[in-house]
Image 1 (cartoon, rainbow, N blue to C red):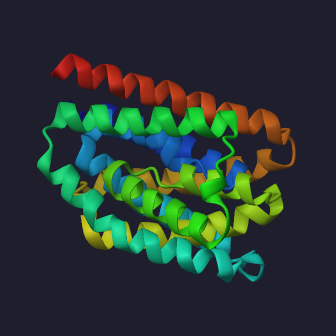
Image 2: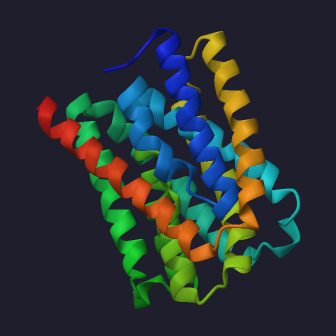
Image 3: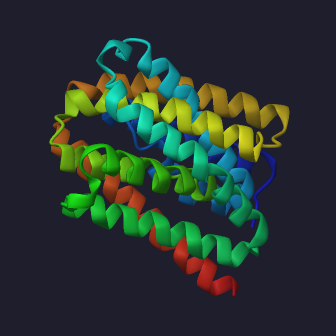
Length: 244
């Protein structure tokens, strides 16, 4: 399944560039867009931990200008709950064979995208209890499938946050939950050329995403992210079924 050589390096850079552009354009979405492709290219375990590292690094840079707008009352329970469930996600990925992992990851991505697209209103996702629930699910999903953002998106929808309120808090959550996930899962074992390609792609993607941020309507950008994520999730599901 994993692809090596210069073709693999180019594909890896393209995936990371796209994910980075999306993250800068919308405030989150690197993992939703990149994880399905990464797990198909370099395998589920390496794909998840690379997504954790990249998404966390992008969130650190993005948070630098918006940390004053972070809401501790919501973020503290979210992050504490995520810290408790990250080890469970890591344990799960180490127990399952690769085709089953692809099914789990593809299913989680697909289900998360559908729920976010529908803007699901769930009374249980409000207040402190809602923050704890969203954080717990997000932490598990982040370490198991590299995708921890959708539960936080649903929490924000049910809390009535605006986009400007959501973005810095999502970035703060991304920093914390990805740090926990990297501590639990480790770092990807990539060759030096691949690391160079990843870092360069993140930088170029950041420039592209920031350049498009003021030009692309918010709803169109959101639809693009979710459409790409849905296509990737369905593809991973198909690969998982094919490998059983």
